[in-house]
Picture 1 (tube, rainbow, N blue to C red):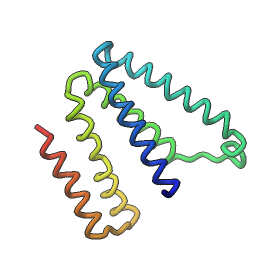
Picture 2 (picture 1 turned 45 degrees about the horizontal axis):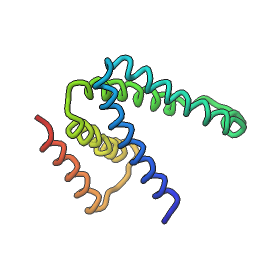
Picture 3 (picture 1 turned 90 degrees about the vertical axis):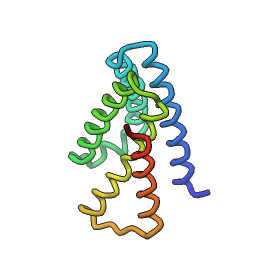
Picture 4 (picture 1 turned 135 degrees about the horizontal axis):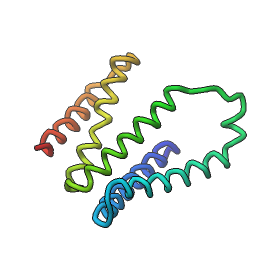
Length: 136
């Protein structure tokens, strides 16, 4: 199995367990405090990552605006996701938010000039269709 594939499988497991734990946390607490503790967990991973990779990160350092904006948009998305967990079923919120790759693909088509195969187009249409079935 390719290394990247193993990494994706592990990421999916982490996202699934994290979403499940987010729902459990929303039963116990308000969304603001849930996000606080999620942020502490993220900060712990971030600090460990930076300390371990500091030589590579800070060697020939330069500012990367798209990366900063990526973090800001993921952070805002996480806040909105946690707030939604308090009021909606996990079985609906997770599949709906998991449709974001379809929008990412559209952005890649428009701004990066990427091309899709018929099979990839079918997969994206099925993902959008699943979101439409779940949405109210």
